[in-house]
Every structure is written in C-alpha cells, then in structure tokens.
Image (cartoon, rainbow, N blue to C red; front, side, top):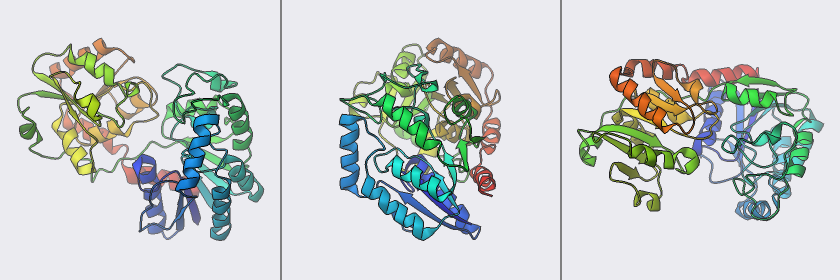
Length: 394
C-alpha cells in the first residue's frame, strides 16, 4: 500500500506530528509513504515533498488578507504537487489541514476526482464546511448548515481584512469537496462528526477516531519546579494554550483568580510577555514551553488542569494532563467532554466560572485519583488510534 499524506506542516505542531506518526507507522508495517507539506521545514527522516515556497505562501496570505480567497491561489505550487502525485502514484491520499496558505483547492480536488484516487480526510476543525472560519462555536453561528454569508468572523483565521467572500467560498467548497467518489472522513470527536453529518459533506462515511496520546512521553514526571517557582505549599491550577487568547479562556482565568482562597495559585503556560506583566499576584505566567518532557513535568506538578476554552474540536491538552495523572475541569464545549469521565474530570457550562469553583470544591472534598486519570488516558493511547486509521486505509 502506498499512502501520500498532505498537511500544512510536517512533524511540527499537533497535525504535523500526527502526519509524521502515520508515516512512521506505515513504514514500520512495510508500506510506502510520503508527506507533502506547505510550510516550515520537514523532517530529514521522512520522505517528503515541499509544496510551493515561501514567496508563494506569502502571496497566498496577501490574497487571503485582502480578498478572502483562501485556498484559491498557489496554482503553480499545486501543479507541482500534482506532478509529484503522478510520480508517486499513491493508492490513497490522506488529507489533513488543507488551509494554511499553500494549496489551490480547485486544482487538487478536480485532479483527485479525475484520477479516481481513494481519499481519507482527517478534519481537525470545522473549516471544511464553512465559507471562511475554522471554528464557529464561540459566536454561535449556524450559517454553515445552509449558506455562509456576511461572516461574523471575517477577521478571524484565515483572516480577511477587507472583502468578505464567504458566500462564494461556501458554494465553491461545497462543489469541490463533493467531487471525490471514494472518500472517508475522520473526525477526532463525535461532536465534529455530528457537525459533518449536518453539513454538505453528509453523504460521506464518517469515522470518529480520537487523537492519540504518547504515553511514553506524557506520564507522571518528578521535578523540583514547585521549589524553583517558590510555590511548594500552594495548590496549583494549570492552564496551557498557545496562543492564550480570550477564546482559550485567558480572561476567565483572571476572573477565577479573584475567587480563589489564598492557598491556591494559577499557572498559565503559553503567554505573551504583555500578558505576563499584567497578571494578578496569584497568577504565575510562563511563555511558550518547548519540549514535551518539560510540559509533562508541568502537568505532573499541578493539582488540577483547567480548560476553559470557548471552542475546541478535541483538545489534546486534556489527554496530556490525564496521562500525567492530573484531573481536569473543562467547559462543556466541542469535543472536550469526550476526553474525560466522572473518575478523572468534571465538565461545567461554558463561561460558568462559579461552576469551576464548585468543581474545585468537589475535587478537594473527594479527590480524583492519579490512577483513574492515567487509566482514562490509556483509552487514547497513540498506537491504538493510529491502528484504527490503518484499518480505514484497508
């Protein structure tokens, strides 16, 4: 079996690591694989093809910012990709993030349809079924069900600062994405699967395969971080995001900090400098962390991981925390609640900061054990999740 993986990045970020993991699995099984990607550098140990160049990406970015024509440029880059596909001759093309200023959707999907190539498409967000945005839960928009227009999130990723083409983009994407005759969609949560089944992609088979977690990396890890940070006697509430925006709950953490007893401290990782210098005394800010081992130590040090995101498909930060033995409090949005059960976490309504405080009181009165958190994380062990995708290939 020959599989070509296409994603915006390779070996970098969450989707880039997923593509790299799938590549490694295929090679280990004796199959042929390659990764075509559009941005940043690839990995030297992966057979890969760089789609386009930095100048073509920047021009695509320019056309998106001014004319809302994301996915409609990079023609030369996509023609180069098509030539590579012709030479590689994959049995299956596994699509991941097609947004990211590097592909021409018309050329790619018309080619796939003409060649009758089998396709697997992992949808990491909602961009495939909208005329513009990658998430719409924050603004409670349901235009994507029938017809996007006058987008309330025009200035959100992939941002357009001038024109709004959401109506035309929606109609074009609906046409193009329905061209493949043999395509299976994979969603990382049942929540997103339900979205897809309401969308113009409803004719396709959809499989929920949750994102996997590497339990060899994310596990209880000892460190002297409490002592180094001078918070040995504090109960630590942890938040992790990058970037740490209002949508990820930054302002909710600030509000929460005003409601906590003196023996609690909040640590937020992934902040910008201007956010760090504005924090109240009982909130400790850290910049973006580098290296999974360092992040695992941070999860392990915390007493509770809090995920007050306003929108998310299936956040791996919850899985990482559980794998390190730390219980979770999360807003009941997107696919967040699918990562926990009553033995390892508590879900509260979005924006319910009082609910977070109540959940903390429940955990303090009846602690959620490290063992239960780890057992829950095993449900999402990476190798098992990759094997499920391999079965879809077959």
